[in-house]
Image 1 (cartoon, rainbow, N blue to C red):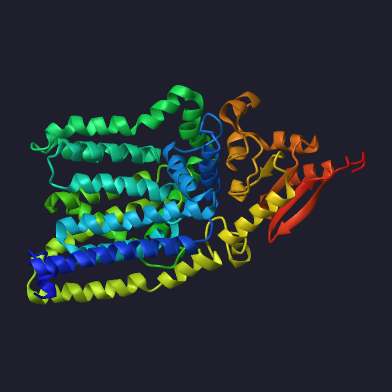
Image 2: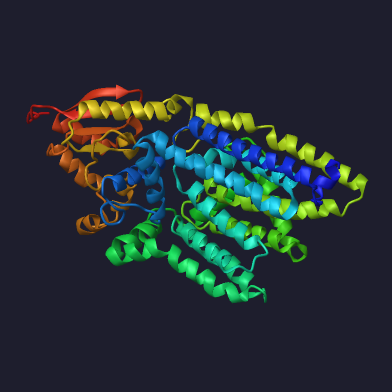
Length: 518
């Protein structure tokens, strides 16, 4: 049997089924080998600092909203804390969780297409997801992307199955709710499963089971709303409403620039070179336009992709990396109908499609090595890094080295002001209360002292006063993170730079008080 019949998804014989089961096993292994490799190579992203430290605080008995500021939904630190519990509170343990989630995303990207259009087309989808620059740039890090997309992909893949089983509907609701417990702005996507169940006469009876799953999956938020509603709603809504100082015209201009980058319009992007997102998102909108003719599974995937694309513009400011969430759904929503179109072609038409696919694949892959170089080594154009001169300070070995220096310079009973909390991972030293998240300074800017205490954040003014009063023993941060106000407070209070690890400075309070003229 030739490749034509394989691509068309024809029924396989017993020996071929066995051969394909071997293919599935090879895909399983390769997905996790690739995901662990990407995780090991990826430079450190700035937001990873507070996500990893939040997981570490959980293992020390603290909880988000109640004990520290955490500006996201509650699920992620509990999932990553499992990695710390099993492997120790190290960067390797937390990144390993991201590797498992990234591998899971790749497997479901493969399986979600395989169940509808066969393994050959599933391998095409897996290839596109794996080597999309957004995927290998942002799924390997300890942020919300990998967990939220994995959970949503499980939910939508189950929804796409032609199943009338009650446990399937319950699972769709459960995994969707857990997705929202990771990233709140995914909530509008609920319209897809609701409409899918409602407009299917065979599956409408499953709506109660879907809602049962939603209720169970929403328990984390219910608990935290009951324990500390003010802190919960500020962290998930209030902070995000005040975090951007842009005017309306500036917001529109910024979002248009993001759109230009995604579709390779206007000025070239400094973040990546690959010409991939125009293919992925352009194909997604073409599939949406043709959705009335699509198979139900393709319609479900492309609907989720388009809605995700739109809601990713809602946060202010909007960042290009938010759109990594769209990638697996857009690719599935394009590949499934493309496979159907291929099956309807003559032999000549099929060969033409393969030739065009090879050409597109070459364009798709052309700049992948350069983009990997950016995010794995040089940091050129990478948000929070900027270039090779700073990339040396934002890799895991360097961050671990800083943590060891903190451990040596600061005693166990001394609290550390870490301007980036990731330096405290595995260091067995506690952060100054209310500084567990480096975004807390921004959150405190528009809050009174009482509100800062309620929401577990602290202003730069109050921290500077603590430094001037010599209430903080150690301060650690990248040289770019020291605001003039903090530098002035350190100088006046007589703090000395005890060590620098590359561009990271460690200050310690001097045994003697500064003179009046200091």
